[in-house]
Length: 93
View 1 (cartoon, rainbow, N blue to C red):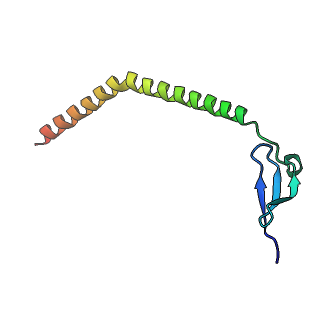
View 2 (view 1 turned 90 degrees about the vertical axis):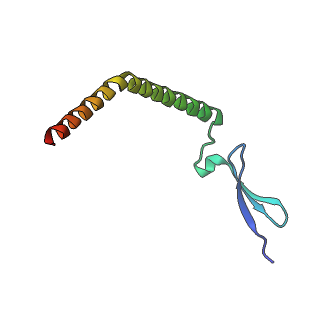
View 3 (view 1 turned 180 degrees about the vertical axis):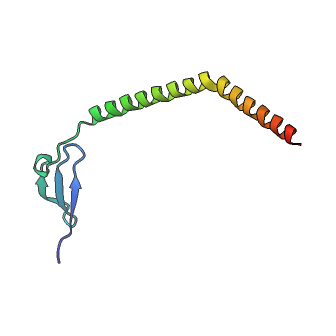
């Protein structure tokens, strides 16, 4: 009978553990440095995500404000074009 082994990553230190499922024993442990993976700083990543989200939110707000500022001019242009089209259609008939 052969034992089955699974590889698991430790959530704290990112070490790779090989566990025997039959006996629940850790057969092998490889620290994160040996795998070429450096443990990530979760706090720094979270701060970066929040900073990025804040920046994107500000950009979206600026875009929305710019669209509001130019809304009147865009509507005036659309109205002018519609009036010209109506006048052309009336002239053709």
